[in-house]
Length: 322
Image (cartoon, rainbow, N blue to C red):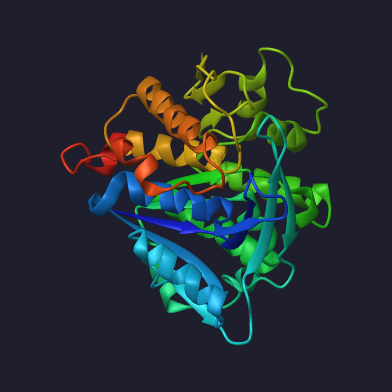
């Protein structure tokens, strides 16, 4: 069985109801948490998906752990920190489905991840696949950030698939230069990177990506396989000196774009693990993301995507990803 470790910060997400002004629904949130949930739903008991983080000992932390466990996610690497509470996000959307966030996360216990040796965290990081993001790097301390990148590099050299989603959030970083330095190191350590065009511009200090030259910018930053999302434009796949653009149908309903990129990433990894070629994996990832943006909140109801789950017969081995 393939093991997947997803490392990051879980959030309690308050999502605008959309019908009643001032009414918000409580949901799970956080970029890597969203990925973990979608991976677990798509792959079921054909894989082991473990979430690595730290939470408090309060009722909201209890709720997050219970929700993750109910999704089939291994919660054994979630360390509970006495007296602390999880971060909170409030999400509102405009008429086009574009979202805006308000956060309360400065004292999130996830900021203490990897700050000291923890057996459960260490065991989780030996998984076949490691997944983390720019938000993961932003919320932990400098020493923990360096440790995570070092572990990712070492694991990649030993054949582990290391997935990195840039997910740059300016307010989480002291300076853009610190963010650029850390994320460039992570891009070099990973084996599969999944940035947005906007993040790529920030990493290279560009006002816009040169038309038709995104692959050149990617090649300057990393030798890893890359799936570049362009926020409504074509998806670009780059690997081993080759690059292809994929135009995708975006005519479906668009209610809330929260979690679109996270679900796309999970869909791509799950599809590749299930033997899909690049073209089919990108199409599948887009199908899942299209389903997600047609619902409110980052994590949609499980029955809204039940037809997309893979069967044990389709999930074979890690070799499908290479």
